[in-house]
Length: 119
Image 1 (cartoon, rainbow, N blue to C red):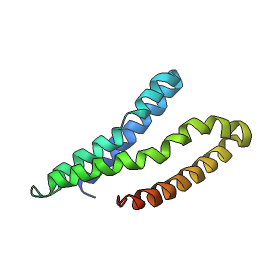
Image 2: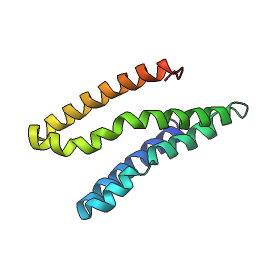
Image 3: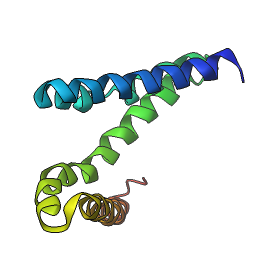
């Protein structure tokens, strides 16, 4: 395993651990950190530095463009998860949220194709 991949693993695990530990102390601070696009920014950083200079700008721009569109179908999950959890418990809420998000992804892809946006 190369040093770069090991660094990626450690950085990712560190962020998840930090957020989960902060949630124990403050739901609001933990939620704020979880809402920040750490994964997107870290991935953008790696894509930038690991891409060839002639495609770097296009790769990073495309990455951010797709993130914008793919975030949209995940947003309702955050609003509905608490209700799902009251109705179906924690694991049911996870499953219901996953199904909801999958359905919304399919809907986004179908609607976007009608407007010439290929996701």
